[in-house]
Length: 368
Ligand SMILES: Cc1cc2nc3c(=O)[nH]c(=O)nc-3n(C[C@H](O)[C@H](O)[C@H](O)COP(=O)(O)OP(=O)(O)OC[C@H]3O[C@@H](n4cnc5c(N)ncnc54)[C@H](O)[C@@H]3O)c2cc1C
Image 1 (tube, rainbow, N blue to C red):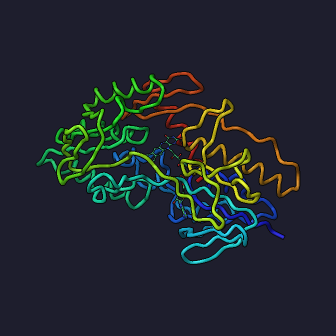
Image 2 (cartoon, helix red, strand yellow; image 1 turned 90 degrees about the vertical axis):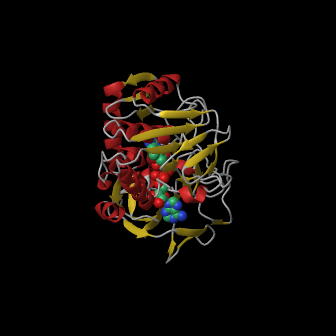
Image 3 (spheres, protein in one colour; image 1 turned 180 degrees about the horizontal axis):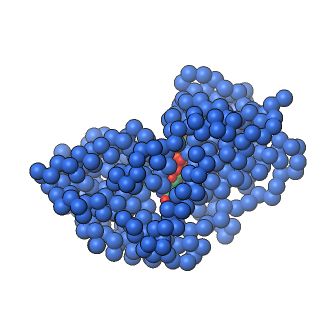
């Protein structure tokens, strides 16, 4: 009898798992995703700036599943019944023996910001991403007026987008990039090597930075900041945080205070032997007990660990020893061929960091 594995979410975690378990005898894999494509989020800033075509950031999931002998179902999961072992989408119900939830996070748009609804372009959704690209292009082309593209949120995603667009704006003097970040530097909370490199890149590329205040309202032409300042804008992209997409479970899943799925050392949802959760919807720790940043490298490592566990379960072998995620470092694009990073604690800068980042991004998507 074939074991039915259902994976919800075709992001970095879900697709790595399909690849790791492809064509195992006695295993039938079904991947469900609300979207027809896997979005390579680590490359979105380069698509927005026109450096990459859409096909290089959005990979067809149906084609991917066919390549690895899995079945793709496009649909949004509306609920999971872990007692009857059934997953419900808008259109159908699927039964599973084992379930993997890898539904990632969605962008967060705080309702307290007045008129935020007019600016809820979620770059983590393929359609919205294309819309953001279209509006950005239009501003670069419309040289009769000066334009400011405001990026709100100076974390990894916001800083990369701001700096890549600022690099492009070097050839379009009528476009200015503004970065609004409440903390005193871009990349807050990251290593000082990275924050200093980001500050320097902002200066070189003339990014206008607003720190020490947060956005309270988004008017037609300007953002209002909490300290009374105004940020004029033609297009505003909010990249200020995420919230986990945990599907509704009956009975409910055990969650952490941050709303993430509570998992054991094997990434099994607490109290459920046959339900795994991985990627951005779980909180993971390295071997020293420090919380890992939610990144593609973490999602992919967890998927590899879960693949080993599932292989042992299918072969009725003892489970392998649980493995912690190894933090290999972080790389941040700083516009053009400039980047900065820490690789196993070693600082990398400029073209070297840029080339390493390209290699890592290529490795992330080589399975497609
Ligand atoms: C702009 C940006 C830049 C980034 N840069 C980097 C980087 O340089 N390096 C790095 O390591 N990380 C980077 N990250 C973080 C990285 O992209 C995430 O950590 C990673 O995508 C998490 O993978 P995941 O598989 O958990 O979730 P995701 O990749 O978010 O995939 C989740 C999938 O689940 C699907 N889904 C969600 N809910 C449902 C539902 N109810 N039913 C069906 N399907 C559903 C979604 O459509 C999506 O395809 C970046 C993120 C962003 C936004």
